[in-house]
Image (tube, rainbow, N blue to C red; front, side, top):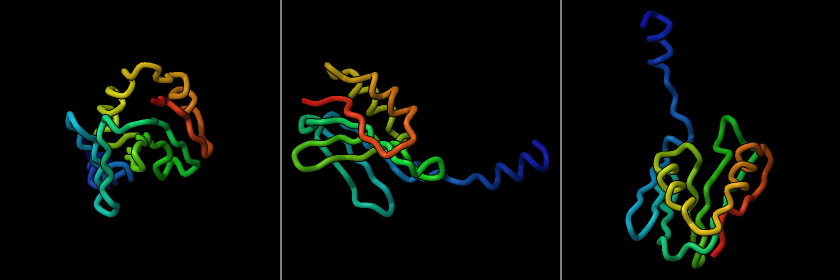
Length: 118
């Protein structure tokens, strides 16, 4: 790879979303982070799904998938392990708003985008 390639490879930095892990079972979604409380919600409890955009990017997490229900929820950062797996499941929900997904991905402001509501 050469000197510069080896140097850059050895200096790889983790992105903030790399510290989040999402566990998916038939019953629940659980998100863990070494410095935050664990969040968990049962699939059957989900009443709303949103994308929350912030103006914190690109050096911080700026898009969160938020699962809300029964006075609890789960926030999954875009780009984290498990995000795509959860998205693949929820995007099959009847009435899922794909247009708001597209709007969210081009937004750089603090804004909420409703994707689905029970």
